[in-house]
Length: 390
Image 1 (cartoon, rainbow, N blue to C red):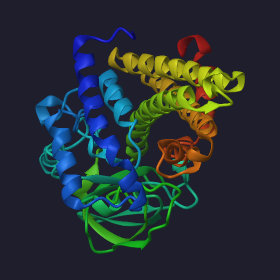
Image 2 (cartoon, helix red, strand yellow; image 1 turned 30 degrees about the horizontal axis):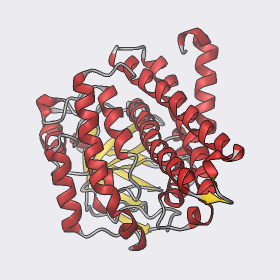
Image 3 (cartoon, rainbow, N blue to C red; image 1 turned 45 degrees about the horizontal axis):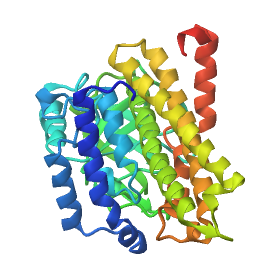
């Protein structure tokens, strides 16, 4: 099915094996508020590396896995079957960076990231600028051989475990004033401080907090600029395309597990002498869930194949939005049905249905809300015509 090659199937099998190893540890992580002992996290990271699942998106010549986009989707789909971010140890360092990094940046950031020695976070979102990145107010001002960075960033995922950040700001002065620029900021660094760390609906691994972080006159060398002044938005768009496709992939995995678990439960749960899987209303929820999963998987795989075949970048942008939009909303509907099928058990934190119900909600928000995805798709339909996109 899905015309996967033997190499694809091998990658998929390794990722599935890893996910199966992690799933039994979910309830303990959930009841511990997501906290995972550092030695356990390190052992899981080593296992991901052993299986060839770490940095799969980086070129092999730089120490990464050199996987195709489809293979990256297959990996993320399988690890998406795991709750509590336990599978986030299958890290995907910035795959867009090698093409624009200086030789020094390759040696200090890309290669160490591929080896699992460095971890990044993205400081882009702000209180008044979420999906609309152009609305950011953070600034970067040239000062001799340095830049001064200022701004308050929200939802800086994994800041607490990162040793460098991508900071995006608007240029204050100069030829490119008002345009975007992106910088590599080593952490910790003077002027960078956590304002507060909010509590969220999910209980993800202890390495993945989402604090509000202030950058106050943070002085960085000009050599830390990524690409050129004015290029910042293009890098953000490339990162978004990748992340939206990976969100879609993880949603496939979550939905697959939910479908399997609610089908098994409905077949075993007997009410008045009959398994509830024989009841028409329950059958409808099962059938709708599997049908939508099949559709979302087909869309996501086809999008990945298009990227591998060199599809026009604007087409990729729209199709990644389509995959993210449909898969994230599909997974949310499946999670809601799963809770309903499990009944009271579906409301217990020890059950995957309850955890996915909370965890999947954010997939319709981060990396661009569903509403933003619809706007992107409609805009490309207008500019290129529907036939180019589907």
